Image (cartoon, rainbow, N blue to C red; front, side):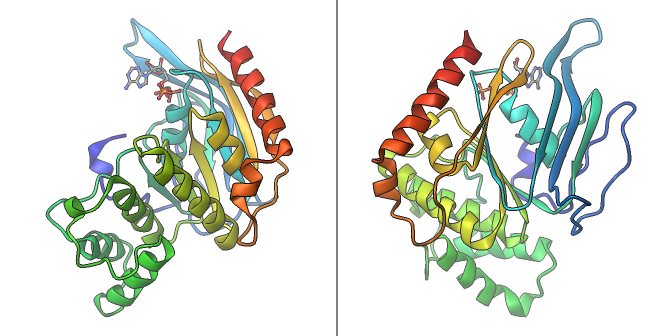
Length: 281
Ligand SMILES: Nc1ncnc2c1ncn2[C@@H]1O[C@H](COP(=O)(O)OP(=O)(O)OP(=O)(O)O)[C@@H](O)[C@H]1O
């Protein structure tokens, strides 16, 4: 992801358009049929005209409001490329990308401003989002409470653990009140315990707030735990080859530890592992 996006938020309903596509969609509206994200026949090419690399080819995906869609697949199959398209950081060579509501991005690395405090980082994002100065302190506290860091606004970012920094990055993305959260392997750099905690928090947060999430991971366990739907991709060129619905319970009352240990969870994870093995073959 480009450093220019260090603040981690996409300010408007991002729309990438390619050759022969249709027009833009404004932020803050939900299109007919209640779709938040639409990719139709999308291809992305990198490289030069003489030596093009087709990163993804003819991908069509729709994401409904409140869905938690996870992209999995082997390295190089185009997961990040699809997320970057939705974020508006890439333009398709063919096909259409429409994002009907405001999107925010969380990267693998927190990318916080080290010269600002935690509150300073969030205040910057709130200011960019147009929140008046007088309202920023209260909103900062609300965001910190939401990600499990109440009262931590005065801390320097380099005083925080990796997990705490990533929580701040999630709070920063939430500062713009996105209805669509785009998360690119956000927990990949964290230790196993912190990762599990944040998985549970994001799972609950998405269910409670109704936020739509598109999430990239390499982990079948993470995909099944978080996703209401998992899209399995294959490489060469990148494409979606299988889709798995995950009918597991969600929301604040769910015992996620028990869920992880359940036979149903194990069976879904095995189904996904088989599908990703086949995709990589
Ligand atoms: N800026 C770029 N220039 C040239 N090729 C690129 C660029 N970005 C990605 N690619 C190529 O596009 C393809 C898809 O890359 P992408 O990063 O989307 O895959 P990925 O599934 O997210 O991979 P990983 O799981 O390793 O992060 C790869 O072949 C990659 O080498």
